[in-house]
Length: 100
Image 1: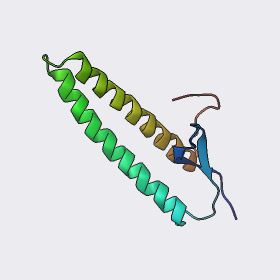
Image 2: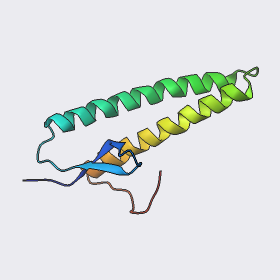
Image 3: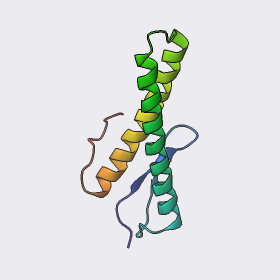
């Protein structure tokens, strides 16, 4: 039996969300999604550490600050997608139409 759709941690080439319909959290695609979510969260931690270092550096130039902010925004989008996906799987969903 198939459960609710799982929001996957990647998008289509057009930027649209991808979903998985499976009755098993142990399917190959589910495990791949779990691994990618873990990697995205790890990357977010690393980017946060780097962004804090750039912001603490009073000598950091505009280019460094823009790079840190760009990476932080990318990671924030990933982390929010993971949160929405995991929240939906435990029964806590985001309102339709909300963007992250």
